[in-house]
Length: 414
Image (cartoon, rainbow, N blue to C red):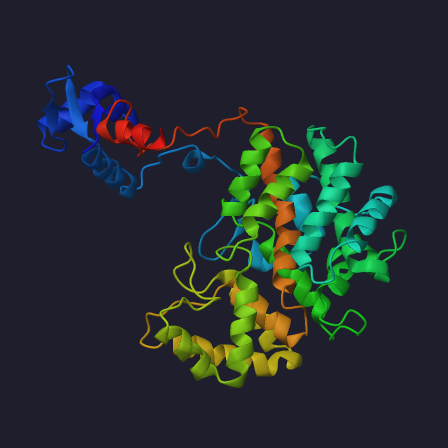
């Protein structure tokens, strides 16, 4: 049994020493006095159990929970970008306008590529393996642009906005290959249109009519979602005064996991099976006790509002009739009994990919491009906060100095 001193117990629980004694008097902790040491000690397991009860109470326990942000409210009917409902913006706006809203600049952000940085990004992408995923190429392009930009460390808000708009415009243009020129971006500079070649399952083919509109809506909906894991990672980087490129790279690193940004690809594979046999595809996962990709969300009680917007768009799209029928069958099966998980935005992205013949990892690229706008907004906010504030003490659960376990470990290592 490991024991903590009164001081260690107080630090672990985040309370004063007097409060520790009060806990002991109320029977919440058991005080033990040892023959070798003066003062009360408390069993570490008992202290950890009490700390866990405090966490379950919902009280903020660290810097992340105390982040104050004016950017996005994540709630039913949202998300809300600075008080404006994102689902409403998805039908009437584009990422350029949303970036201006989130970055608090007037008008419309022009994601114009920089010709010098573009040449470097294209050269790096040309050397990438043919099998590289779309998000791998996105990360490579971000790193290339960072290496070629000597002024990237300027953290003044106006400079950050200029750097970020050039970064995203350059990366998207590089990913699109020769389909988009520097001087004459398609559709007046609309990022959704310029991104299409990088999303297409067959870059040489013509996009299905309506693809750009769906992509534009998806980019708007995915621009930010509060303190998601990747956004927290981006804010931690920004707290060190890391430049915009490093902030985006930090966000990309956290996004690139099967519990976050890769779920749309998993949902795409699931729907591919479901198109052949929807009940069978669903049943196989239920029998295996696996989570159904594209269902459930930690915030929303019902259907993810972003999913509702995209699926409604697809219902009005003749090209999506077959995949929408499949999604409806799967949703009905998953919700059998009335208490099943509701569809989220990853399922809607997977349906879009199938309906418009996009790459299987197109959803991941849409996430990366759109969420870059959100990460930059959070970086701008974080740069104004005290630096290096994300320094938790952690919860040490190893052997205490001088304990039997520590002595045993030392002996074994010798």
